[in-house]
Amino acid sequence: MGTVDKIRAGLIDKILRINNKEFLEALDTLVSSSSNNSEIVELTAAQKKMLEISETDIKNGRLISQEAMDKRNLEWLDTL
Image (cartoon, rainbow, N blue to C red; front, side, top):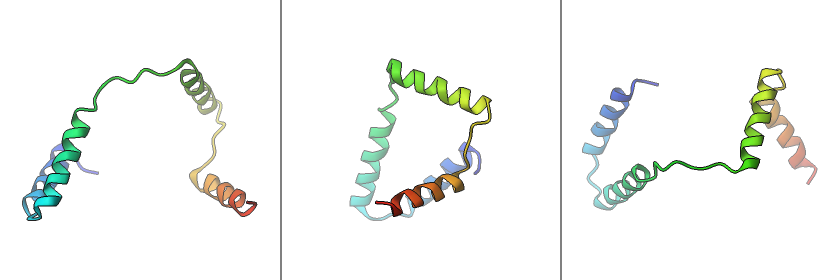
């Protein structure tokens, strides 16, 4: 992935080529709503505890690859 400036410039170039008014209005709504959504989220005690447990698991090497997790999930789905 490129730098923020490269990404921004690429998006601007793409937006300048769009002629669909409805699409641009929808994009404007999306961008406007996401920029207003920068409030700080307070975590619950349970969420903080889960993050602490996750950090401990990472430090102790208790990890599973995405590939292994996908395989496990598919096996689980087959049992339903």
